[in-house]
Image (tube, rainbow, N blue to C red; front, side, top):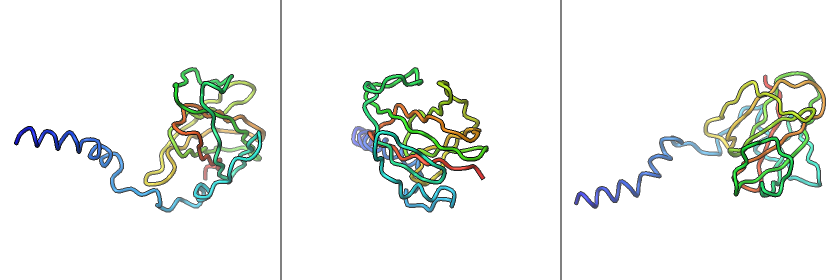
Length: 159
């Protein structure tokens, strides 16, 4: 009987651990107004993806081994990477919301900018948000170590 109890405990451990991390959450939970566009991303089209404030985009990513010149110094084999261009029209603090765990670098003049903060939106399709202080202009967005070949991102002004 003890062996049966141990076998059941081992079999249920992953489910119980997941439940502890995600207590009855659903990805259908409503998002705050400034993040609502995340629910209906535009598909990636063309060679260069322009990400403007308030528009969610589903980026198409490539195997990380095929993407050259990334600033991420710790690429993980078997993950995915890609680039996009961020369009910022006014100075302020901006968040970049991402649908999965991935490394996000905002690049200006060939160097990664320092994030000012990061957070998570509980019970939502957003995995994380990384914040940067940005001035008007174009910035590179480098995505690396993504678990899948696509990633939804949303650039938004922090209220």
